[in-house]
Length: 367
Image (cartoon, rainbow, N blue to C red; front, top):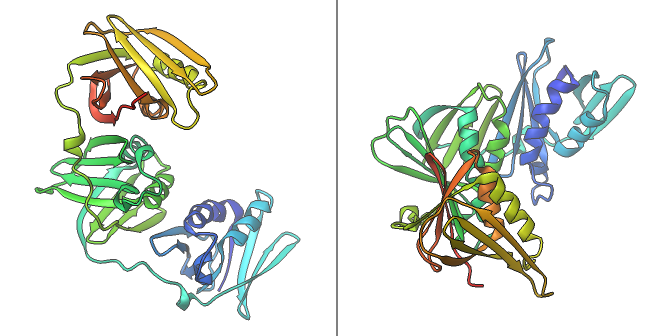
């Protein structure tokens, strides 16, 4: 194997592929990236057995074909440290990888390509093509609500639900829920649900960098595969039953509050400074036309904000984790938001004013 490549052309796919590779591995080959040269194409593959990412680069010069695996992070660090306009010459010599650029020389250890595991792919049962920008928006609007290391392992990921003409993403950690839907050209009659693990979702979002580009999604029994022009991403699915999110959505809330998103966000941020660092609780007091936000902490410090809102129902006092409210306001984009409440023990429903494609549920806190 022998090829030359511009530093920039190699660094971008290498950084994304190395992102999948775990630093601490039980199998040494899993901390490596697989390099394959065929014709004038170089492909780079990284995997942690759950998620696999293949990046493809067109080479400008004819190359000598071959395949080998090398330490992902070291190769990436070498590329990063070279000058921007460097031309990198890479070849395999006696089971070592020789990397040359200008006056720099590096020799890296390798492992045979045959040792490199591939994520098995079953038959795909459903295929659709989406705009990258819209899929990215779907992920960004919901991924913050995924659980991180919950024993209910099916919460450490995102539910993707496909039905006729609609793709919906739902994430919850048991205290809050985020849901976003988009129209998509899918001719699937019955509902099809898969749970994509947290790492898979975050890696997929990193790939969607071309707003005008498209991404092709294939859903199988045990895998999801996404292909863009330069990358093919495969992730195992989480085997489990996601909670029935429709039962979680609050129904029949009679207290409708309309407020300025940015003003609310700033008021919550200021009040949060003096909330209890562990529980992050704040108290909302609603009265006609105004919302009072209060926080206090064990050091007997207090914060209070008053903000004008469009509300003409009865008075209500309710507590929330302020971080959850800030997360929701942070991904919304409209000027006005609506908050639907029923009583101090029921979850709140937050939505953008005049836009129903996203819904957020936050459970109350007892203060």
